[in-house]
Length: 440
Image (cartoon, rainbow, N blue to C red):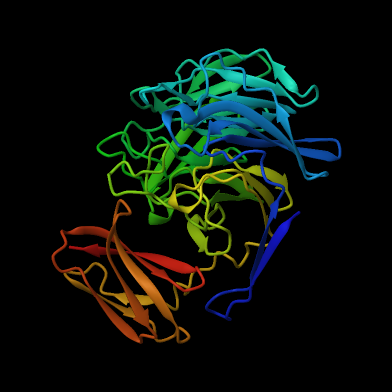
């Protein structure tokens, strides 16, 4: 039986624009699982979703497994597949991609009885036509887990950065299924904002986009860095990389997808955690976000929509059905709850969904740069209440508060060192705007 929840967002003129996003629960997975690899394949008129490996509800070192499942969209039914054929045992943080009607399940890590982690160098090949596994592909040159993974032109598989046994790596490993060969492409930057695990991304046209992830230093803090890689179509192993800090790029184990020519990030968390959802920094349990992040190449801007899908995290893939429809299988809810839910999200239009809460011509702030105080002019906004957050350039929250129908508001940077900061405003229905300020 399907449970359905439809949310229509009828938003105020000049402040928030009309949009519609709907979601529904389909038949649940045969078991509760998280950190599982997810992809889909369309064969003729039938679309199948696949879930491979993951960790069970115990969230313990013995909870990783190789159990795999197939879901039929037309019948709304699941069936059990043979286990993922890895002789080294269960694994999590792997990723699955579809190329020319074959599924490639790459990397991941195995948990030892003492919770030690060993990265995998395997690529498993699943044939949807026979509903069984083929021989493994050639081993990855560098074992990897929690990588960014995306497909270029239905021909090459890009495995970008990720964790390899002891640290994050800058490698970009490219697999060609037609030759069963790996080749190293131009690596990402060597700094910790480039080399991450738990980041996610996609390829649109000839450009790679990836966001978020955890650094390899300290307590594996989350990054708020957005990266673009321009693939040379004449030599797809040649990539020109660029990136910049943006608080809306912050995220960990989000599901990445596309909507037309825009990149999406669904769910995830705003801080990093181990496989048991306990924060690496010792702050306790991490809970999921109900966020859809959007990058529009036409405007070059990141934006986000909050509150219009159920909160979900620990994702290692989103199945794209086309026509703005997406499936999310398993994952983790609040308070370490592993779920068997199959969530279908339908996005009808993002043309206006990503409008900021006030256009640049409406929201004025001065002086910028400032020595101490920035004044914000809200006089042209409709009366409303909203929250604000002050973040450093890395996206860490420094101060927060609430504002109720202000005309003018003064933000003090007193006591903070000189440098750049972000100010994030959030309306109750989820839309918001981020602006940069500079203290000299």
